[in-house]
Image (cartoon, rainbow, N blue to C red; front, side, top):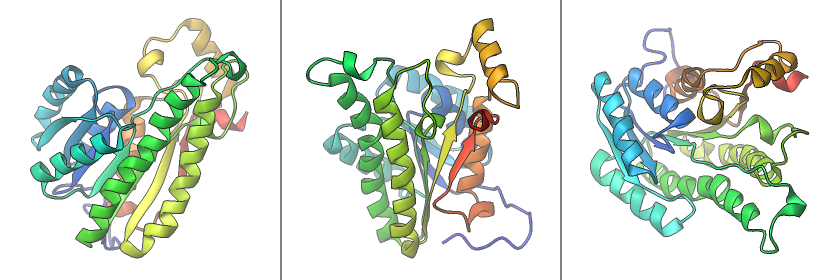
Length: 263
């Protein structure tokens, strides 16, 4: 259990804490892994691209903690079970789980194939992947009886629907994660395990790392803070949610979108 803070001293200190970040080898996931490392956490990156993971670990080395990567396809429950067991064998225990791994789509629902392959691809990764990881790590957190923090990375797309970009399975999965987060906050609270979500808007990473002028103008026209967010800003929010400063915070969906959802 994280005790309530009595001062700001060490309120955001995660030294001695071990974290799992799925999809932590790139994009927002790496920004979160980096932010956690910078405040003292040890980090296990779970992902499918092991070469990219090695590059990520190389960048984390400067922070002086323990950083490892493990192959994991979050859609595969048996694979998740093995990956989590491997993480625990190396780190001993996990205090923070960040469910970040995800995929998206731009295929209109009625244009999908007859097997709805694109629907299931997104749902199985974005929603079921979170469920698989939460089940495996959550049980171990419960049995360790030391509490924990689960942070699910959802999206602005779980709250609003963009007219210019059809992504119904992504919308549905992210909205589902939001409510799953609330359900876990209720179910796991008695074990001193907190569950919160972060819903980013347009962040300068991945396909928006080098945005076109037209895209930047679109973002500026839609939100009060007329710029894209930075990955490290999402990482800072994850640090807060994992830290002693947020010990009384659970079941929340933290939107970080520069005010886009106010439009």
